[in-house]
Image (cartoon, rainbow over all chains, first blue to last red; front, side, top):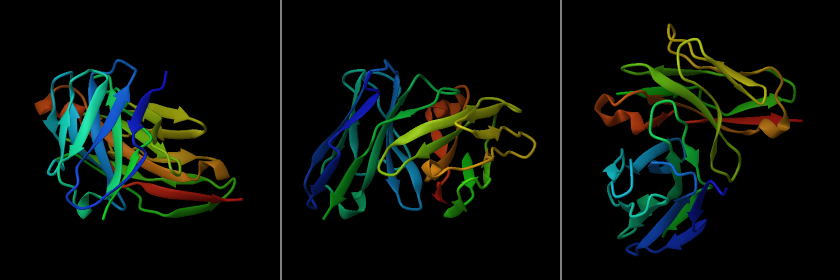
Length: 113
Length: 117
């Protein structure tokens, strides 16, 4: 049982390049999330999904797109990277909402130059 | 909207000292409350949680009590160890489908704890 895994662990992009971050979970969770973590800002929700084939915007969705074609995978795309997207990205998953905790992946450190 | 305010760090303690990290929240309803811990270079791990008023969450010597009257969920440990050095996040999540907001985990900004030998 690997839990939540993220690929890649590190990436450096030039401004304007695109990339996709992959999140996978093997806990059969319905909900999945993408967060970014910046110094002094805590974690901010980018996009989330409440089930296969569904996605929705979080607090800071601009510049990102997501897809959830399979229940176990949640992809985060950057179409045209900007230096403001330099951050650590965390994926998480959970059983529905309310009392259920979220399980986090190890993170992807992205630098945009 | 919902929000979490936690004590800003950094907090530096000697081994075996007592720890309290304050956390208060604002929510339109009855949230579940969580403490997450992030060790250097890692993702967040759930440390403990409480889902209703007066519940006490505990794990690894840490405790926190859900106080509805003071809207607080302070993290405490009687004797910290060097291995407790990490960033601690307080978070809340709403019950039910109140506008679909039950998906969202609202985090505080985190408190860096350093424990020296």
